[in-house]
Length: 162
Image (cartoon, rainbow, N blue to C red; front, side, top):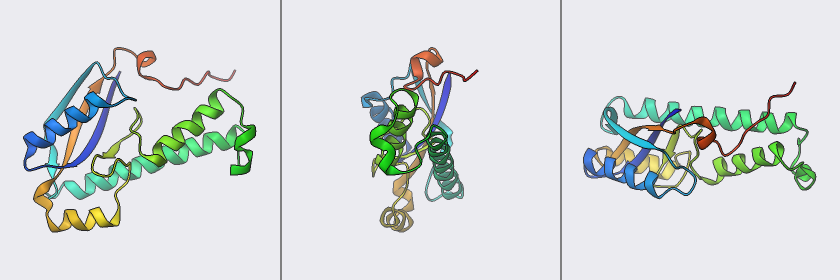
């Protein structure tokens, strides 16, 4: 099973950005890939025309995933925060767990964009302004990763409803 991520970081050059991406994934408690490759030709610094559209697309994809998880949780019967204490263990509680990871900033297999500077799936206005002032110092690193199997990758398994 293959996964891809955009990892955004501050670095003096692509080699340092690549190193930071590898170090981050190697130290992740939640992701254990079999292989990780950084693709230089798809990576870019903020002083290129590709940076902002790719970053915004990654954030948009993350938001879409988060909204889908929330929709799934609501379909499982949890529509209000007051219902969380009575949430069924299993798939519904794991959905809530993954939602919390997305909001709180823990990278997972579904993360499209991840901001290493803020440990976040998003980008703060403050960091956006900083990047715009020093675009040569910020990189989007395209990562291609592989798991030996989906079973090895998944933190959550939904049993299909019959």
